[in-house]
Length: 415
Image 1 (tube, rainbow, N blue to C red):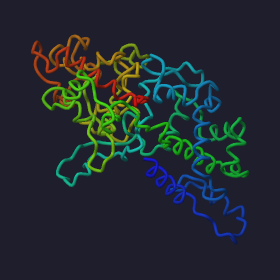
Image 2: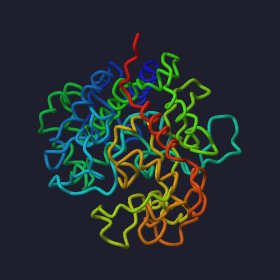
Image 3: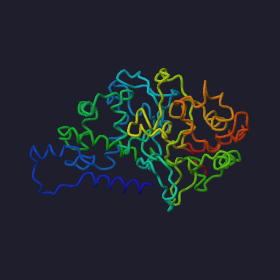
Image 4: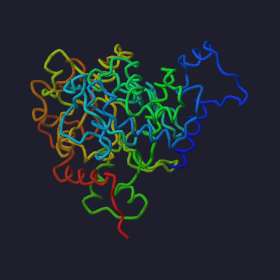
């Protein structure tokens, strides 16, 4: 993994920052302005070439710096806690932010771990298995609705979101960097004149955040018990083994159809997601302030945060399939944080259709407008009629949860 990471970032730096000839003339005011214009590459086009360790250190410092928010109290790490697999450490369904630090978000904060291989969003995805006859449909992108294509683009979103870090605009972010405690480190990495080129400064900041989030030790360590099991260093307990079997069984849990659990043909350890976007009929979270409006619906792929696919009604209600790595450390589940227990999540999958009154108030699939039921996934373990025997019993549920706990990083292999 380190080799892949180093080569990828080296290529990133090389592509983004071509070295000027040693005899290059000092740029004029006109050429300097042109150099500061938006570019396809996102690193400063002129100036000092930073190293990967420098970018990683700067990105880490920015990630933990609350002064980059409008309230001066919220850092990236406030919601993506390094101590909790870069996901929230509290039990809130959605996090608080904004200019006052008390504005409620609309979606649960996902973990930032194991997103290094997220493909760019496409409506028609084909696995790299040599068979292009299978169209997996909408896949990839960052955020719950896949609307951002890259990690540096995703990093800008929270900085400007009125419900998150709350900065008015990009200029406000650059001003905070220029006037804040990180300014000396920023100038050391990008050059003393970096803040005379605001666009370059912003793009450099986003680059530092992206490079930091490509740090293997922090963001994809592969140190769970299941990883040790795949390396044949340990065995799973009988209950964990049963859970894995049910997890993979296409006629029972069928979890691995979206949360891939096998080493890939190329030898890559599983990310426990296929990066797809799917509608599973998650119940409405009536505790969210935004849901106080009965006419408001968060429909994921077709809006309201994402707007380019708003006319694709067949996509409504589809959200990103998250990785299940470190899932047991979370305290809020699904895009709206409507569940607080992993056991209840698995039980919902098992009984959504056989006991819908346990999960919905009023009508089934109550967090989307009527008439969209056809969008909801009905593959196992879903399906069946009210009163039918669910595909998973209580022992199956307990076994799956026991297996999911083997996906937490930090497992120590005993000699």
